[in-house]
Image 1 (cartoon, rainbow over the protein chains, first blue to last red):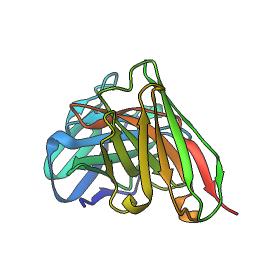
Image 2 (cartoon, helix red, strand yellow):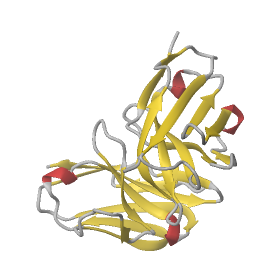
Image 3 (tube, rainbow over the protein chains, first blue to last red):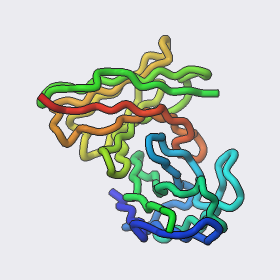
Length: 108
Length: 118
């Protein structure tokens, strides 16, 4: 099973700042099957990025994804108030899915 | 707009079987994979398994011995059974649709809290 590790656990930033979130896999992941989700309290996760770097429908262009192999990054170029949430990476392989433990982006 | 709605008991006794159903509206259940994902309070997401509309399944290896999924295309529903539950199975359970090309979860239910307690 591929294990995903996310860092940092918590990121404290101010609105307008840039957020850089990391997702590292225990073995190589197909970039086609690496995704990022945003989750706010009391809500289901929302798909942000698929295929490591493609934005899902309706996702603002301040969100971008990059990476390959075992190292992937989600960048939020300028944080808006509604971006403070928990972010999860997710991979698919061998007919199975795993999620990272999440990175919480909170207001400094 | 596709909508998913979980339903089932909110309280299950230890050692018993947790049963949930997800009803899909606003679109056909056919030709998609449908998953169950859970989240203990304050913790991360755990994929439980998925079912295709043909009935083909894949389960999380860590839960495989206790999980059964089924699908009823005539009702646009799919279901989860998790046997021999313990307090560790207490979580919010989500159903979700898997987008075919990106293999991601593009539509989610609102989630339902299931508590395992006597």
